[in-house]
Length: 114
Image 1 (cartoon, rainbow, N blue to C red):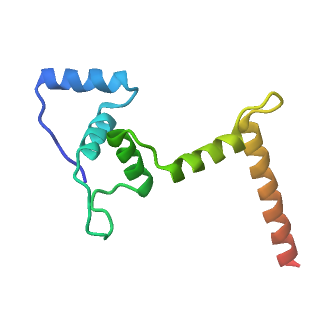
Image 2: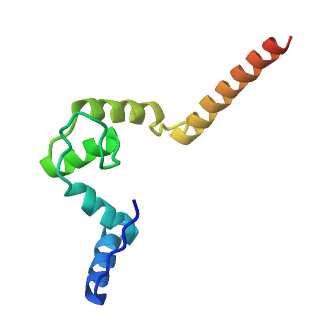
């Protein structure tokens, strides 16, 4: 959904300043304000807000101050897997893993073509 909002010059300045403080574009900042202030969707059906489970968890964490233990565990696992070490960076390790996966796929394709 695309919304157009008429803001006064003062309101525009306030939005721009607040967005810059958080390192966001003004549109992204306003989107966060909207999603943080939407009432919860309790029907059990798909969310009409367009937020993913991850976004919903982030919104709950921001408003309640509590963290979802499952999400924390996933983040920690990823951080551990791609954490910087003295010998390699996480980015280098990720590239090596992708290269290994690509080699495996190519080997499977060669076998299939035979």
